[in-house]
Each structure stands twice: as C-alpha cells, then as structure tokens.
Length: 146
Image (cartoon, rainbow, N blue to C red; front, top):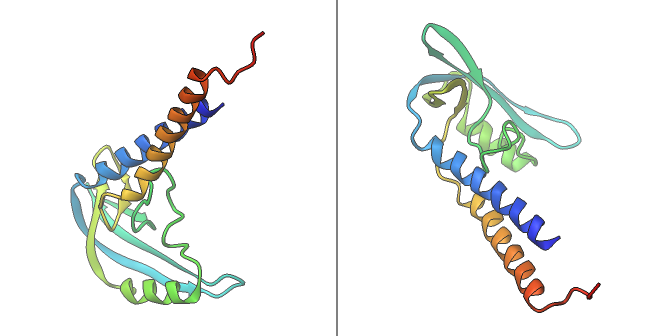
C-alpha cells in the first residue's frame, strides 16, 4: 500500500513540477484586465478575468499562476479572505495592461505569472519517503508468511 501511495504521490509531483517548469518557457503577449471584483459572500474572495489577442482571436483567462500545474482555475482568483481578496484586487484593477504568458501548444491556456512553483516538490518528496518506507517494510519481512 505504501509503495502504491508513494508512486502516485511521486508521479503527481513530477507532473506538477514539469507543468510548472513548462510555464517558464511560454511566450507572452500583451493583455488587459477586463473584470476585477471582490465577491462578498460567506467567504469573500477575488474574481477577475483578462483578455489577450493571438492570431486574430480574442481569448480570455482567469488564472494568475498555476500553483502545482494540475489545478487550473482555483488559485489565486479564489483566494479566500477579505485581506487576500483586497490585495489581489489592488494588484489587478480593470484596464491594467500586463503580459500574458500562453501555452504555444494550446493558446487558451494562459497565466499572468510564469514561474517555477517549488511547492510541487512536496509530493515528490512525500512519494520518495513513502516508497522508501514501503521498501524497508518489505525488506524487513514484516509481512506474515503464508
């Protein structure tokens, strides 16, 4: 069980880190914030959208960055809490022009911050630890003989 869990965590981390690394090589184009607001609900959060033009097509996105390369659309435009929401709203007002980094293989995939996310190393490390623990258990013959 440890081996399987460790392998899955390692593969998730590897894919997440690879996706994060890929964004650092994406080209960029000019973009503009078209919507920026704080949604006041039980859990206040920031929502926004920006647009950019590629190949004569007007495209839209809502991602600032992709924290682990696998979870599009949840960070930080959904950053909870009024302090985080106000901070983001101040950084991304309507009309602000900024570079938009886009995936040349799928120009609909875009982020405002193309950066390496070191958090993706956590599942890699956890996976290695779990696999190591699983191997150690197997070697110590902790399994009952049948």
